[in-house]
Length: 420
Image 1 (cartoon, helix red, strand yellow):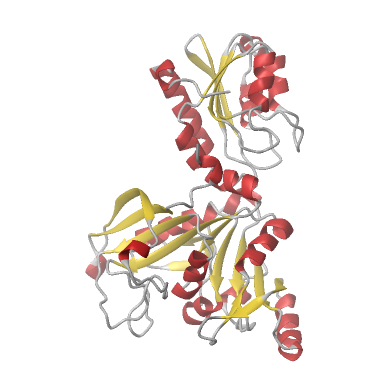
Image 2 (cartoon, helix red, strand yellow):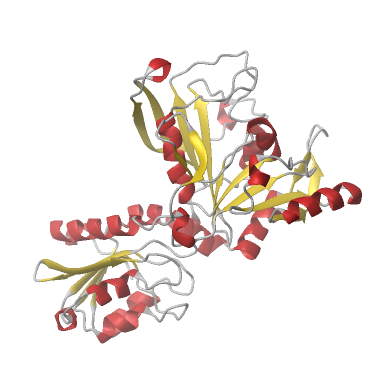
C-alpha cells in the first residue's frame, strides 16, 4: 500500500497521532527486541481509550488500547491511530489485526509500515480485506526514527550502534595528562544516564577501563550534579537485561575494577583474543568468570602499526545479536576503538556532547584516531539531525555555562529501511 497523501490527513489526525507517538516514547528502551508503539482509539471526536507496548512479551499497543476501553461496544465503528502497522503474525502474542477485525473498527490510521520482513504490509492488507479503511504514512519519518533500533536489527540482523562522545569545543576528550573529569557538565552526564537506558548494552575498550575505571551502567546522582554514585537508576529498563561489553584483547581487566566489582548485579561480557596464551587465559578467565563475567574468545588481527591486537568487531556484534539478543549498543570508548568502528562502517548514529572549553594542541586525546585522510574531498561526512543547548546552573567554577548536544548520522549509513 502506498502512503496516503499528507494533505488527506486532518489537524485532528495529526493531533491524535502525536499523542500516540508520545505514548510510544514512554517505553523507549524497555521493549527490545520489539519496537515502541502507541495507539489511540477515537469515537465521535473523543478519545475513548489509549495504550502502548510496555515491554517484550506484554500486549501490543493496539491490544492495550482495546483492553483499556471499558465499553467494548463503543469500539465498533471507531477509529484507531497506531504508530506502527498492526502485526499479522503469531509471536509471543496473537496477531493484532485479528482483534481489530473482531471488534469492528471502521478505520485505522497508521504512522509507518512495519519493515519486519514477516509483516511489511501484510497487516494492512489483512485489514483492508476485512473491509476496514486504512490510511498510512502520518509522521512516517519521525516514527521510523523513533524505531531506528528495531528497523536496523530486524532488517540487518545486527545491533544498532550509537556512538556517544563528550569533548571540549576543540574536539579533545582529555587534557595532556589524560585527565577527563569533567569536560562536560553534570547536567549533560545526567542525560547520558538516561540515554544508556535506551540501549541494550554499553560497549567500551580496555583502555577506558584502565584509565577511567568507570561503572558504565545507568546511575543516579546523590543530588549534587557533579557527584555520580554507584547506585543504579531505579527500575533500570523495567526488568530488561542491561549488559556491559568490554573489548579486551589481552584480558587485562583488573580484578578490583568497578566493572568487575559490580558484575554480580550488572551482566558483563568481556571479548578477548583467540590468540591469548592458555596460561594467561586460564587463570584470569577463571577468576573473572566467578564474578559472573562471560569471557568470549573471538578472532583477532594486528593493527596497521603492529602494536595493537584488534578484535573482529563484526564477529563480536554477531555474537551479541545471536547469543545475547542484544539489538542496540551505546559505544562509550576512547578514540582508538571508536575509530575502528568508524573504519568498519559500523556506527549508525552519533551523539556529541560539546563543552564550551578549549584544551588546545598540547593534548593528543582527540575524538578520533588517524583515518589517513589527506584531502577534504575524502573526509567522512555526517548529517546533523538536532543541535541544542543545555544550561547548567550551579555554583563556583561550573556555574551558568552551556553544553551543546548534537545528534548526527553518518552520510550513507542511514538504515536501509529508512530509505525510499
